[in-house]
Image (cartoon, rainbow over all chains, first blue to last red; front, side):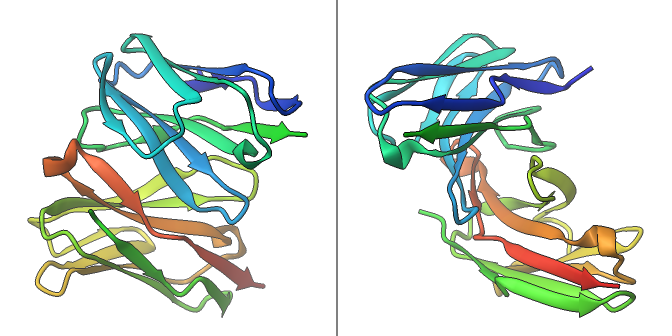
Length: 113
Length: 113
């Protein structure tokens, strides 16, 4: 059983399109995250949800809109994709908002052409 | 906000040698310090963590030390093996900032056989 699963694994799309990435965790964790890893491998937090409530919202363009229908799911919708959005996006979850035992999904490689 | 600096950015060692990666942080409220290993094309994986009320923690060949006064923490890997080759990230987490984890920029460790 995959603990944190995200789909799709790869996403190639044209500039200006809208796309979504889905994430689900079966660990019973309260907190879920979206991270962006750029070409230099830097890992940056984008959003964090605790029990469906947004608790961290970093300086991210408002073209990015997360949604958590329940504490096991966190989706990311991106409008009007730009070349600079190309990156690997990781979903993660942790037991509590303190980030202990954080478990990452396998990532979604987004390429905008 | 929190600032985490990680050094060195690249580290090459001979199999069997030790490797040390160091991180400094700026926010004295940070109290949880995880380390992640990311193999090429894979997700980051938690390998060890330490809380602020502990000075050292060891798990087989890896250990982490924390100096709260100096605001730095280090990862030590002994008897390195080629499979230890990966990118290692440190992070500092503060529960006064919704549990936000700030990551270091990563260290690429290469263990030569």
